[in-house]
Length: 170
Image (cartoon, rainbow, N blue to C red; front, side, top):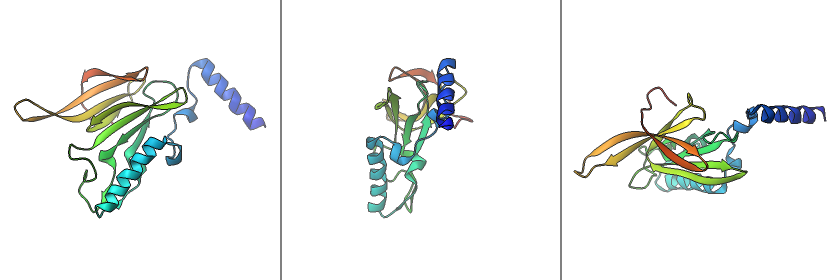
């Protein structure tokens, strides 16, 4: 009973001070992920097995950041980070390449927020953290250019903030 009262007091104090409680931004377990994301991770694992590989831990492809500063973790799934032993990296991805998906928490619901063919890094030096994509862009002359584009999230939408690099970032 005392623990519940203390937990309520800590939560009330955190809300009053405008700082989210620490437990609100902790990573989620697999079973706490939205069904759509769990299904996607199962599909990656299934494709790996069907292709003759050995699926690794699907949670290696999942990361968390509070992009919209609401005190709840948002979810990043990067197919590039899924390990399928026995196959080359990215073998389980579509022919166009592996994708990164961001799912935003919003008022107790999950909603797709962003998708890009490519990978990412996170800039935790910004508050809220920002996503920097690592993506291939094909030019009119048939050549390809790797670009890193910085995004911030607001009201469930992704906004480009220009080019950047992932040097030294997670």
